[in-house]
Image (tube, rainbow, N blue to C red):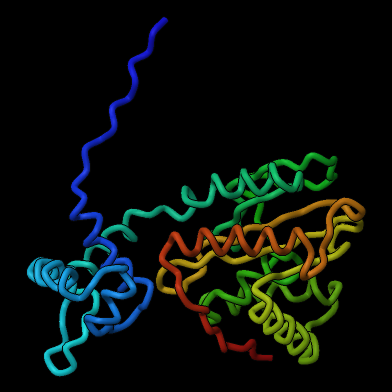
Length: 272
């Protein structure tokens, strides 16, 4: 059987050449002089200028009247926002989570914030037997699980404070929640924000460890948590271990595709 060879698609080289100027502005993230912009794009200033005039007419770039520096224009912003609006965080994460599960052999699941708290919506099973009842729809404890701690650390406090305080008795083993309990949990959330990861080791389920990482959107809001879970002996919970490194990279890559570019600073603290 003979197969027709796929014909190479026709391109317009000048558009690809001029596009290097847009990419240079994007990488720089600020205003640039013509000479610096041309150098970054790998062309002489005289060649770069006509492209910039055309891009300016379209609104893809704009020039400061005082300094003469160039930056991305209003059309570039509109195109970026249109692209962000069509993104579905869960859909963006699915392939990455499957790849992470295949690479590590560990159970990986995605959680979103639901009406009752962090809720599992996608689950990739571990290669190792784990006697834990987690399925789609499972709601995770805010205080007692790595997934819950991620949401506790990065969700706006005013939205979750009551639910969080109601959940703290689990952390206290069913005892009354004291000021000291709240302060200890509050400090753990500061550590979560600093590391960008939450961890539980053999708790609340003996012999089972978990690490969880946040996924942010272009506004710096947490939209997902990705959690890796496995049994002691085959799951490395070290902060700088292979599992933690792979999980951070997975969540970071998804966040980047959702337009996240800077660390979200959450300074809210629990009140006793």
